[in-house]
Image (cartoon, rainbow over all chains, first blue to last red; front, side, top):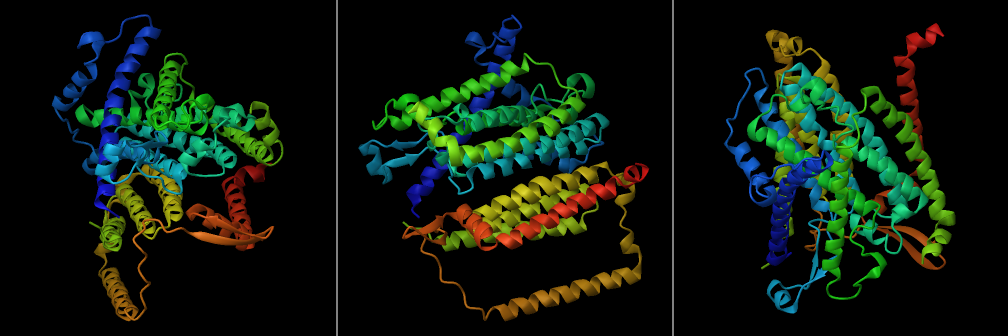
Length: 356
Length: 196
């Protein structure tokens, strides 16, 4: 193990962190702009040209606000909860491949000592399982925030959110099992490469898995139409009622990070990840860069989808939420696993033959 | 310049082992049950870190996914709904007999640990691995059409061992779990079943 490899890891992690934070900041601006567009108004347009400096203004506002500690809270847990939420959101990014392998130009390769650069911080053997594990930890941020606030609305929000996340982790996991069956690997990079030629969403089991996954995805990120943990009109924003200033900002950032993570995961699992359609630019030295660009476009599309859905669909009732989760999604995903198994063994090759 | 990976992993072991020990102490010593449960999550997390140092990435991920992610969420869920006022009193320290029992128990336990550490120094140490962060785990599946079949990688090795070599114990465990689930449903719904 050499110092230059460790240095590259450190640079990759640092750069990734910077990109996520900036991405989240502009995601909030995009959300408000899209909300404005859908509701036929302008959205934020005062700070800088087209309101492009709005995230900066928001950040400064959050940082300079007074830090308020309500006297009735459990201090330690009250402070740890937002930290858990945000660190889980960041950790999930360590296994996401943003593109294939970059070939470094020879002048740079001589300095760093190698010429292939993976656009991924870590590639553990358990790739997608690691993501699931981290996203299952994220629920602690919400539970502990709700409990430590010592406020009945917050506790209610926390309990709702816990029940919701536990229920929807099952269909989420089961639809990922389908993808694992189709790809034959847990590593996100190999799942993405297995879709060369035919994206999983264009196969029958892949399509059903995409439908269940995308519903579960909205529930896991606590977004509308499943944002019952917050529900402004009934719970006064639920688990983060008692949070202000930067502690609230951390929850906010975590939510937007989770949305970007889920957009990455859905484009990796079902839409070919960093594979370029029709093999454009394959074999050229720019293959890695084109892959990165295509992946970014796919992620941006799904990130837009999150906002689109939020401003289009009304919130579900709590019993409807549980019914969709347990009575619809889980049976569908279970049946889908059987379909996927028959697809892999019997009729997959004929279906693939139609497209190639 | 090269870095000795064994040195690095030893430092990380100390960090994670420290987290496990500290969090476990917090589990039993803290007055507040929710804090205890949260510390238990931290202990599981540290244990996953120790597994990861031993290159058992699959087991480490499962530790986080199943214990920290699924089981402890339910535990905290239940603890959160309990009324906290009565639970936070530490009645046990008021009884001198119980105090003496606890001190005795701790002393015996510490004695066992110290003697185990002393004896275990005779056990031969494993030869250090050659500076790779991920040695290739492999499981030999036998032969197919004259070619050796090998499951490579951490997850594949665990899967092959579970579903080929230990298939019967695995199925027995799953039947046991199914029985436990049915038993839980029967106990929970006993009154309703009687009324039918």
